[in-house]
Length: 303
Image 1 (cartoon, rainbow, N blue to C red):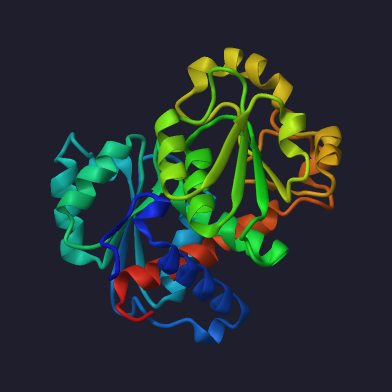
Image 2 (cartoon, rainbow, N blue to C red):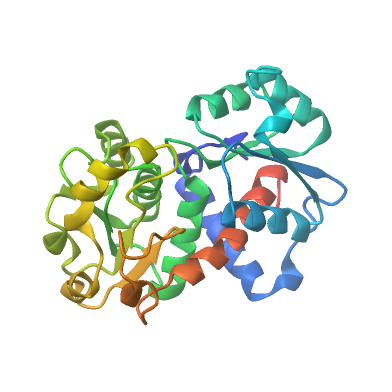
């Protein structure tokens, strides 16, 4: 059964997640195989937050599926100002085959998905970044082969990226270790949910212990959009969790991952971000391939 929403990674079953990744890989290898799954139809892409990779990758995904991306800014829609989130979703569903939104508040997406007559996709919220996680899994499959039993260490804030990575790991057989400063750990509810999905997720404060034997080391910015008023305390707290050459060496040969944009010199040093172990540009490129496969599965019975 095709899901009516993709607000978090575990809205997909393990089998459907694997199918999305398989399609993404096949279509990346041979673009001639990409179906016209959105031919003659539109996709409403709503952005309450600024975007570079997400907007371009999603617009290109819609375009290469034969569809027309209709990109909307927050001020053009006015969610819960001009009209409710539910009415926005109902209206956009009259004209388009799918709605994808990048929002501040995850509850807005929940309300839209509850009202929309078409699938709703989370392009980022305060709780989740599931399309990023799909690209992460695709990148890891390309670099490591089978994901079962491989280990990823996430160093940094237990934020929306870390949460989606935890669910993606649980559904794909990855083992995940998250190392964060005190007070910035992965949310207990997220941890329990990932483990209930069968995931192996461990928390530790010491980043050097966390990375030992890891196949991949992943980080994100210390100060996300919306956290600017906490910038000073965050930078002081996360100073012990910078990914530099010494930390990567302690892993014993891991690849380096980052969802971007990177704050060079804060969460990661230039020699790691630009170094031979870095796969961040492969991750960025895979954003389009992953979301394209997802959209095709969401809007067709047989992609």
